[in-house]
Length: 246
Image (cartoon, rainbow, N blue to C red; front, side, top):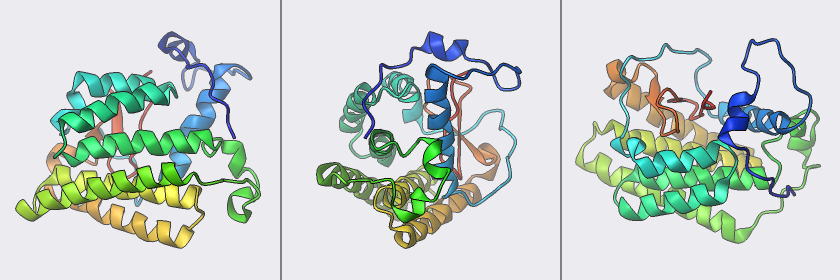
């Protein structure tokens, strides 16, 4: 089980070598960030339906909640693996926007990744052997954390479906439902090792995100703006992943 490291500061993140710089760092915080970023991509790539990289839209659509200052502050902590304050802030957002499925899904994402990180499941060395499939890497499930994650996922799906029933072309609601299903699938696959159940959830998530693009193909262009700390950060609509704020 991972002990909680000191949070990485934004200045330290910005000082890391950029991709393509030719600089290699073999120790320090960079090795902490790389497994996280790669692990995130690996977990959520399981849910991706497309291997292509779409072009960025000039003015991507986003739920207005993603522009909320408290959400952006929360994602400053999220990107630096500092999950407790991120979760505390997003809980406030959820309480203030109790009818918005996006608010529940933002909090769900933080809760899921906090648990995956706590169990070392975002470390790429976990996937260098067959431990992921054989269970050699123990993933003891905390029933309280599991129930919290499943409750948030159910809440997000319920709120999204309430909106879809009122407006079958509500792209934000389809997006939130697909995102919540994808996050639940990631937890079920990684922690519970229930790959069949996770795959079925991932297919449901994919169906929702395809529907998003069918409803609003021009403004999405395959991408969606993320609530990250940098206005230039993006979340891929199909993989639900984030970029670091370089």
